Image 1: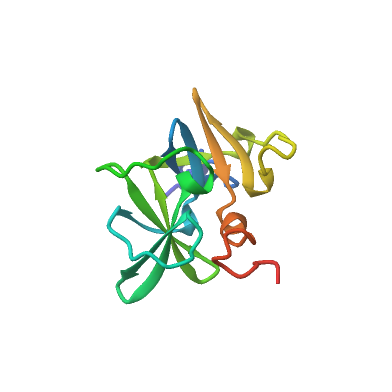
Image 2: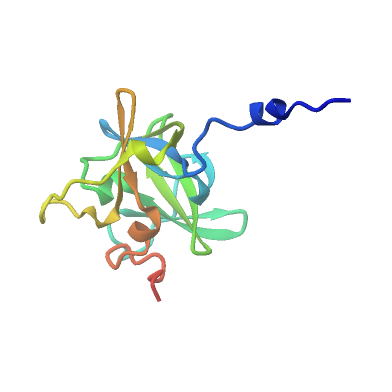
Length: 167
């Protein structure tokens, strides 16, 4: 029996091994993306228990199968106007450095695979916008995703939710 060496190469994926998958979500008119590996689950928005003296962007906490999870409203965190909660509003449950955190967004669209060539560095915005929390801008056809470094954002001093990852 003769083996054909071309057959084994037919199975090679056309996807770049350095590609990354991002969960795309909307806040207002903009579309954002976070590393899919940080996402534990996606849930509908439900009432939260408010915590006294918490920053405004921390909506409160929920009990998720015995784990108390802080819930952050990203529209408030990014100063994107008054949040509204409807049937499309979702909470993305994240697992970052062993801590579980919920993130309220307007809606979730899809999981997008981006090759390194599709990720551009974020432009410098001076002091108007802190780009430390951005991986860059992902381009896919006519779409542009603002790629958020969710580890860095959630561990930032102003969030105060997760101990500094650099320690």
